[in-house]
Every structure is written in structure tokens, then in C-alpha cells.
Length: 586
Image 1 (cartoon, one colour):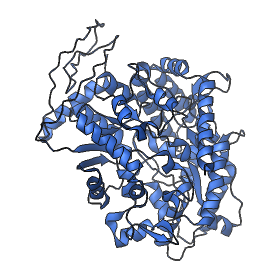
Image 2 (cartoon, rainbow, N blue to C red):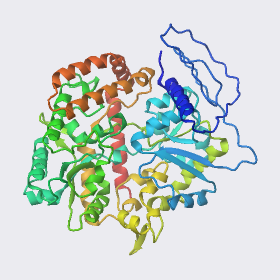
Image 3 (cartoon, helix red, strand yellow):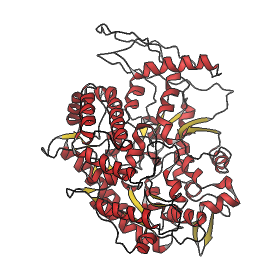
Image 4 (tube, rainbow, N blue to C red):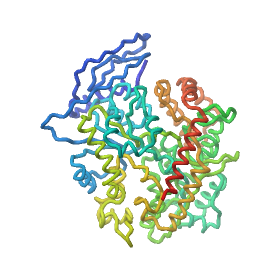
């Protein structure tokens, strides 16, 4: 039986030998761990598995034994520090905020990371190498979480939650209970943010008005708008630079770019990589990309690509699609409405003569009347990657330091992490603190780049998420844009969300096969979109046949076993109520 984690270990060790990269030698904790050996059937290739910093154990197959190592205290003469590895786009290691945080909490913090699109892959390689950071971004819904947990690479947080009530009391008990593993312990601090950041279509309303058109409500109307943008160039951009529609992301691991066309995919009833209620059985959950309508969604996107209405580097370029929208050369993108002012300011700085007006479309109606909007997994355990966990490399003092940092960021450090520094990144105007535009900061004091605040904030407090004028994160948004965006958000969350019913995926069958399933789906979708002459029906048949070779039926059965339609819908109603309460709270 093959296990990806074991293979990564060998690959990482070989690559280290080839490149002769010097790396710290991982400490092996000498502990006696009783492990029950399980006899497994002969396999083609036997891979010996090593777990660094725990006793080396043989690979367990039919019965897993969780090995939880006890971290060793730091030597008395060692200086306390904390290492954090996370996804970081546009990271500036010389930013002015990191030293201020270190001064406030009283210990150095070593921040490291890679762009978000590459984070999961890089983190898995690092964890396989045995050189664990103290804290990592990790969610319990990730397949890797169960691997790390089973191998004893994570620290339980229960004792620290008792010591830091500010953290523990931030979430209701239902959330913490949802995070408990089979040993009854909690291993992650969640980020409950999905409901607050729905994906919508951001478009140039000033261009729409110049074309004399109404806001698109259907896929056909959206296509007509894009065609008019291409044909008439209402922004006078020029044919060579003009882009009708550029998704927020153009590429990325795990089919990231395909998740950034949610309003299109969902309007066909087939949101990418989502598990939805079967059109034939209201009590059954099915994988949306296996439905025949998924072909129609891909053909629609292929048509946009063929006719030059979709960015021609989609699924190929490593550039960020949103940045092309920033340049003021695109008619529409996919985006979160909360950042309307940042998008507008970026376009104004790029196109000095432009007077951009940005509007948002909550969702689009498909050919069969299906409402397509943002896809949300209503998981009370929180979002996947943005959650945080501690590894066994963290000593008790370092674990304390991590919780001290989180608690400080949520209390005394809240102002710094949301506004920055007065006179550098924000100003007080008429008694109200307002952040400066990012472009202005980059020009005058780039070390105070507002983007760094997001990179340095470990886990946003729920109050960071709420789109309100009294939230420092949104205090600098003009009143007119605040009044426009608020009902857009409310409408989107109340009426346009498509649910992903695969909330609980904590199962070995799912973990061992879901990546392969998603990879085959990504390959199929990419082929269809980028090849205008491809026989879609024949390719779909080949794709469905390939899925059968990934134990797809077993995965589908487990998804249905672990997730009940009524329970997922109840979780969504609870999250909707939580959102409404946060928006209306005095």
C-alpha cells in the first residue's frame, strides 16, 4: 500500500543529498512507544517510513496507533523564539511591523512562507523532511491533517486553551467540539471566515453605463457584456491590452484558478470540486464535476476563451489575474466586495484619466434557471488552510509564546494589526482612524505596506471579518461604497450561496484518494477549456472511467456516510445567523 507521506520523505531526503543543501539535523526524541504491528498483504514495493522527533515506527495499515510525542523544554541557556510557516503572497521580510510585534510580545518570531498557491505542497515537503516549524497553517479538513495527526506530529492545544481564555472564549463550544479528534483533543485554532468573504463578480460599472447596458443577471447577459467590452472598448484601453474577463487567479496548485470562476460553474449546477445534493435524490450527495452539466460549464468557459473574452493566459500564467484588473485594462474579475476601495484606488493610480466605478454581481442564473454564486463549505470547524496548528518541534515555552502572540493580536495588538502605524499607514481624520491607500503607502513608506498586516496576523478574530464602518479594517471606505457593498454582501449570503456538502472528510479512504480525484478533474477541465476542437463527450467518458480507477465510489460512499444533508444545511443556517448577528450587533 502506497502512502504519499512516505514517498515525500524519500524524495525530500534524495533532493537534499543532490543539492547539498545544509539543513539543521532534526533531533530524535528517544522515547519508548509501544506499537501494535499489523500484518498486511504483500505489496509491490515496501517503503520504510520514518517519523522524525518521535520513535521510528513501522508503517501501520489496518489499525493505526496515534503517537503523540511530548515536546522537550528548551535548554536553560536557550533564548525563546517562535518559528511560523504560512502562505505569504507579496511578503516583504523587511517590513516595519514585524519588529513592532516582537517588541510587544517579548520574543523574536521567524516568519517564513511561500505564495498561497504553492503553500500546501511546500508545507508537505517541509513536514516530510523532519525540520518542522513551530506553527503552521493547517486545517482539520485537509487530507494532510489526518496524516500529521496519525504520525504524532501535532501538539494538542487543550491545556493552553485553559490558560488563555481570551482565545478559548472567542468561539462557541460547538466549534471547539467540532475540532476534537478521536483522542478527544483539539489540535487547531480555526479561522471562521468563509461566510464573510463570498466570491462575486467585480465589474466596471462605468464601462457598462458607457455601453448603455444593464447589469448582467444571467450567463448569457454576462457574455453579451464581455463581447461588448471587447468590440467597443469603452475604456479606450486599446485592443492589445484590453481584457474582457480575467479571473482573480490564473493558475495554482489543486485547480485554484478553476475555483475562481464559481459564479459560472455554479450557474450550471456544477461548482468546481464541490459535493452537492443529487438532482435525483435529495438525501444523497454527489460530486458535481461528474454530472453531465459540468461539460456545459466547461464548454461555456471554452467559448469565452475561443472568442477572446476570457484572459488568454488563463490556466497557464503564474501572474495574479487580479493585478491585471488593478491595471485598469479588464472589464470584470472575480473578487470579494469588501475591498472595493482598494481595487478602485489601484485602477485610478494605473489609469490617471480613468474614473472607475466598480459594482458587484452576487451571482448569475444559468440556462436551466440555476442560481450560481459563491461556493461555501459550512464547516463549524473553520476554514482549512488559514487555521493554525502547533507541531511537536514547539517546546512548552514556545507553545505558550504562540498563544501569547494570538491573544496579543486579538487584544492590545488589534489596532496595529488592523491599521498599522499612525502617520505611516493610517491617519486620524475627524476622530476616525482611516488607512491610507496602499499605493500611496508603497510610494512614501513601502516598509509599512498594508498587505504585510494580513501576513503577520495569524488567525483573524471574528470581529476582523465583519464589514462595518466601525471595523478598523474598513474605516477608510467611503460611505457611498460602504452603503453599496453592505446589501450586496447580505444578498449574496442570504440568496446566492451554493453549499459544498463535503464538510467532514476525515477518513483514510478520502485522504488517500481525494487528491487523485481532484487532479483528474483538473486535467479534464483544463483540456476542455484550452482545446477548442476537443471532443468533449469522448473526453468526459475517459474522465469518468479514470475516476473509477481512483476508488471514487468508495470515496463517495464515505462522503455520504460522514455528511448528512440536513446536518450540513443546519450548519449553514447557524453560520448565516452568526453572520447576521455580527452585522447587526451594536
